[in-house]
Image 1: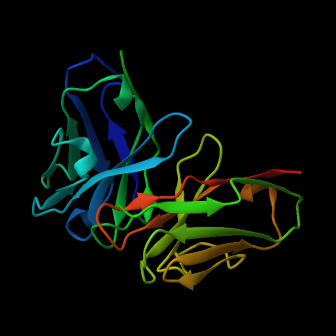
Image 2: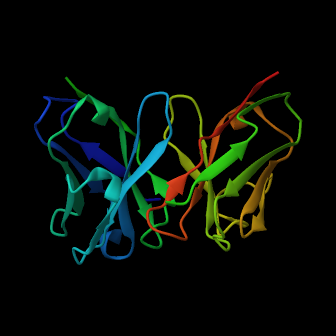
Length: 116
Length: 107
């Protein structure tokens, strides 16, 4: 089973950009669709968007254009960038794999990002 | 966005019990429904996709049913590792949305 490992800072200052990278342990980057999902403490899950290895993306409109994603096939990883963060963006962030753009079949361990 | 609701919000059960969780979608989502388990302190784990299909490695004690707007997750012979929170997720329409979760804890 593929392993997904998130790297990135656990603390981001307000108004700055939150950037996380998800490293894929095998060569399946071009086979699946890759998503970012977050979970605000004590609340539910929110799908942020997905990216395909071609660079095709789709984002959740709830993020009001603050989100972008990128993929680096040579490093077998994909990234999340969330601009102009506020305390409301404090959450556990997950990267995930799916068989289709909106599907999630396998999740990474989460990484807590605090905006403060 | 499609709104997902779950009932009950929480339930208490004993080892060996059979439990059923219901998920409702605010509009018809066909069979595009997944179930996800999250144990305390652990990463979420997807269990079921397409309303009824078990992902590889998921034991047959988990089963899903439903179509359209009403879906159920049933867990038989509840074991300690099954306690946690269960979420449904629709992936029919963009953006995918999740239910608020049902917490299964020890009676």
